[in-house]
Length: 251
Ligand code: PGA
Image (cartoon, rainbow, N blue to C red; front, side):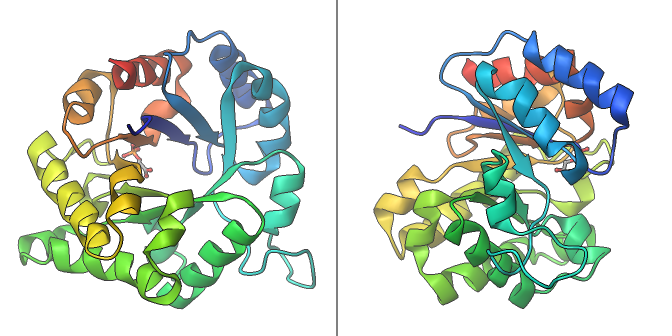
């Protein structure tokens, strides 16, 4: 039995007043039973989010972490062990904005993935195809390659302590959502690819869908057999909307 997860990726949004308001909204939000809820604030606000939310059962994650787990000479980065020390539990690895805009390579992402796990953070590996790749019929090939980049190096067993988010790049922040069937088809392929290596890990790993999820389309997406929740961008910046999405995962 997989517990659904709903995670809010705030990206580089928020100032002090806005974050305080959002945290207050999240604290007062009725949480559905059996759903793991997490938020990923900008690094600057992680500690504040932990203080505000840890009693209420909402986990806090980071949107990025360094390629080595320990603190050290690496200007501008934040070490997984530093994140763990302030109460951070998860970290996004390989969000498409970091792959595409910041040029993070598979090699960098493998190092970040391993460093996160070495510090006890749970990686949320983000994979997904561009519109051009989908139109060329390459969706499963691209997503499969991104997954294999980790599996070939570390084995499928690392996904016993990780989450995978399928986020078609064309659906992120565009208002275009993959149909439940489109998302389910990719999720089933991801699970099958892992099952070929380790059936037990494949059956247990949570596969989140991300890309323009809103309260209005969440229930339909989360109703698919291989969709175990969502990674929510824009709609996670509003506590009421995010709460409604969390409740959709509980039904
Ligand atoms: P979106 O973003 O929900 O705003 O499309 C999702 C994401 O990038 O994680």
